Length: 170
Ligand code: S3P
Image 1 (tube, helix red, strand yellow):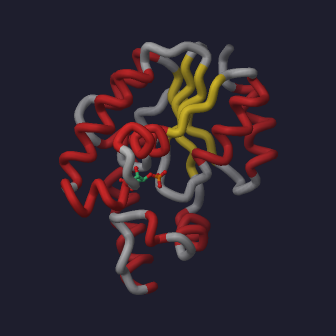
Image 2 (tube, rainbow, N blue to C red):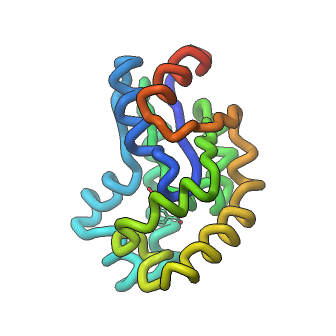
């Protein structure tokens, strides 16, 4: 598989696992959010606050298309990437998508720290944060479930990478 797309909710470990998986497979690693920030010269939060979510989603789609011309890459997508336009179909025709599924309680635990970097969650109280994560995950799961592989993560990146490197078709 020349392109592996890791998809899943914010905090599910896409970037940590992606980096390690790429190293193990001797593929390049691409973090879509980091690439967008580099190309725009500003943070995701700044993009959201200055130009809004629709502008960000258009950038995200354009970035995804450009990544589809690269080979031997592991891509960590943004949590919303699969849920806009035909991004899921694009990923499935350009490569192999893996949904990194993590228990909602673990996601909540992880997202308690660092919400300021995530514009969709910033400014929420702890109670609102739990509710928002659960509701948004419910809306998004039908998109995530279109992945070619649904992989239930146990929350340990090293173990996940070991298993994924054995089960992802090469
Ligand atoms: C988003 C997830 C973020 C980033 C942006 C929007 C989302 O990426 O793309 O803040 O809609 O879930 P991570 O999943 O890497 O946090």
